[in-house]
Length: 339
Ligand code: GUN
Ligand code: ZN
Image (cartoon, rainbow, N blue to C red; front, side, top):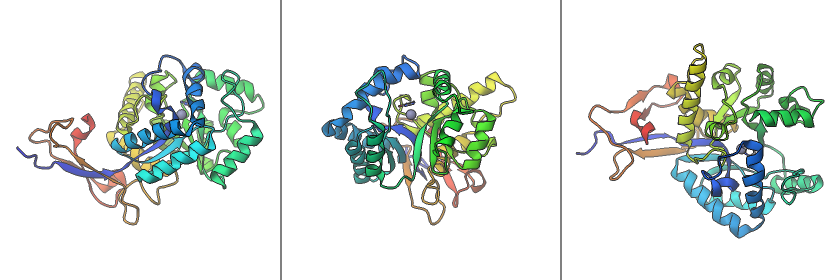
């Protein structure tokens, strides 16, 4: 029997933090904490992107996979290699995904010394890459060991946030991933500077890094989106990021009865409009407001052999404008979350 309502449209999802260069080993290397994980798995793999054929193969697969998962906008990390990073931008453009691509800068690496660039080359290559420094993306306060290390490396800075602040890297064009251990004082600085946070719950759980208190970030009015953080996060799916954000919030509620759990609507907003705000793209995408580009997903709940079953009475739930700041009404099927 045909479903009564089998299709709906929803805004495309915005992945605010994904390492395209790490996709090849996602789901296979989650047995170490962050710093050991970077040295053992990440840096040796990322060093291979000097080879443009290698880069083209993985980056093409990343683009196909993220699009299949409903990511219409993504903020990618590439590697230190300028030409491969430019290639990622070209491939995203060819596939029609709205992408921000960042070339990685790393001038010290004692454990994997062949994967780094001298500072001068880093600066020159970054200028060749972007010509004009507009957006800045990095990681902050992800795990306790890393926070400790940054304290040792920058003893004159008051906090991890202060390190970026002092180096003019905390602006309204900045997106920082994680932020699990940011203090209220640091969140205030994020708010004042207009800098955004990318919440990557799968990564935070998979690498046992920590749990971001999203409610506290929202209370500080800091721009916030969701990220998959492949391959710290094992899934390239933003629907997975949305689920993990809900899980994390529920764990925080189990630990603290006062904690106000995220609602599904709030998590959905983070995966769409919140992400576009974090990337300063909310004038173009994130919801169906008239005047924005129509970045939409058409979801069919009843395709033969599809991943979910529909039952009588499971019609669409109408989420009104007041929930999502949408210009129009969005119909979304509650069972979509069980895909
Ligand atoms: N911190 C520095 N580099 C990385 C990375 O590649 N992934 C994650 N999760 N954290 C980082
Ligand atoms: Zn990351």
